[in-house]
Image (cartoon, rainbow, N blue to C red; front, side):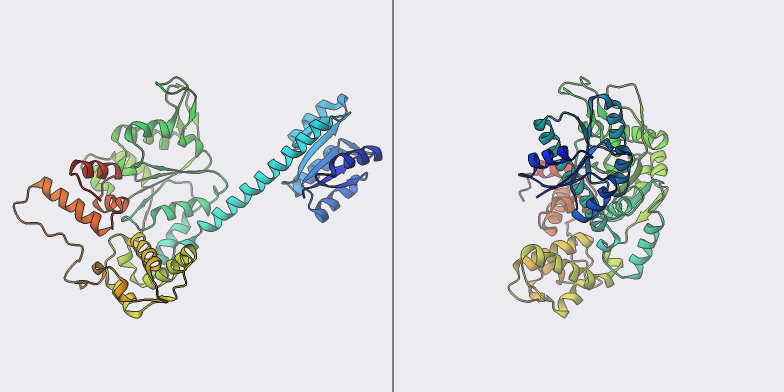
Length: 451
């Protein structure tokens, strides 16, 4: 049951309000302003009904004391008609609302209920921020290899720097985890972290998603929409798969980076913003610049700080650690009790090249745990591609194509084999082929590939 404190120097008011509220709440009263904080601490009060004058003490002073020490306690100010101006001042100091004497009980019930709802929402948001801060810490980036430690040392150095960051690396290496750690461990952690996947949003919608628009800008724009860039104000904007953005939109993003202002579609008034921009790609952006697919000026603006995530094949010593980490994760998720992996499973996986990197390893462990009937996962449980021809002279992900095969047929074969390799996972297939999921979808439809 929620707890309410009534602080008023008139005993009859304390008694009558207590009588009115005690059926639904646990109610405490005091006529001494000096007892307010003591009761708040000892009883864990949710809402205070505070008179603006308690004896010789100004209620505003009490309010300031409450909000400076217990910010989540909601205060409803009780005032006489003649002191509305003081009530407004009280709200500026953090009061939830004010009600006037004589008190309308229906109004009181309504505001007490809303104050409790607001307190619970605030508490949930605070907890959510705490959870996000813990979840996206460096503890989530698993491994103890020298390669990974050197990389994370570099990341830690730029946590609180507002310079733009370009995260590069192969598909499945965890670029999104690095972006989240940069935000949730940095000095912008209490502000918004806005993610825009440049490959997942259709090209004709990406600009309006980023910049927002005014009502009536185009057919269907029946109300104003705030774009993701503005939503990220004071926080972090994460542009994932930045290489998939078309050149025209790249020019507009360049102006955002340079001027720190955004103009919604249909408006001619720019809005100043303060946002840290983090971008990620699995493509070689310098090669994209040379081929004319990416703006050189934008590349240099984004590449102020480059964080290249090492692929799993360069940190083989992390494989046993990752196996145990994912084993615990999927034991809990799938309600299983698998104890571990046989020695030959670990040795086999340490020899494997993992083109899908950590994401591929995680998917493998999830599958092995889900299908396992034994406490120990043995080599026989591994799909054949993980151990067949697994030596340094042969890459078991090779695709054999006869000389003379036409280019369209080669493209179809490559897409089909890569889909097979990643067990139908289209995101991993697209990333491996260095095309967008949208483009992959078109190719699958064009070649009538059924998966």
